[in-house]
Each structure stands twice: as structure tokens, then as C-alpha cells.
Length: 65
Image 1 (cartoon, rainbow, N blue to C red):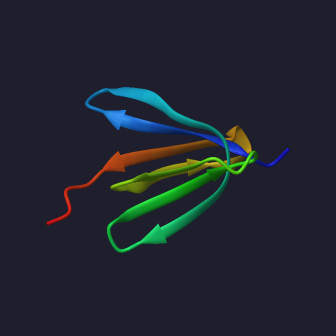
Image 2 (cartoon, one colour):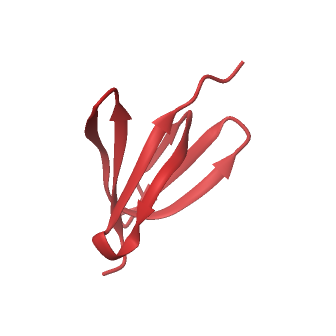
Image 3 (cartoon, rainbow, N blue to C red):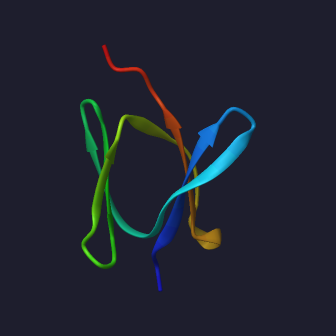
């Protein structure tokens, strides 16, 4: 299995945003994440860190004007 869990950085904490992420698509105003079941979520965020050996993606919210 190659999917990873995506976490959202909130202050000093990291909150699980989405499990079993298979695809991340960048857009001008954020990211679309798709899991292995086809469920999609969009978030105004950027990738802060990725550790694919640990199956972990860390996202950080951004303000879009």
C-alpha cells in the first residue's frame, strides 16, 4: 500500500485531515486530495512536509485573497 494519511497543522498540534490519500492535485487556491475509495476533499493549504516512508503528509492552511 502506497497511500498516506494527511494531517493539518493547527498551531502546535497536527489533526488528521484525511486517511488513505492516494492523489494530491494542486490548484491555484489550494489542494484536492483523493483517497483510495474516490472520496475527495478540497482545502486551502500547502504541503508543509511529506514523509512517504512513514505514509504521512503534513498540510498547512494558507489564506487566499
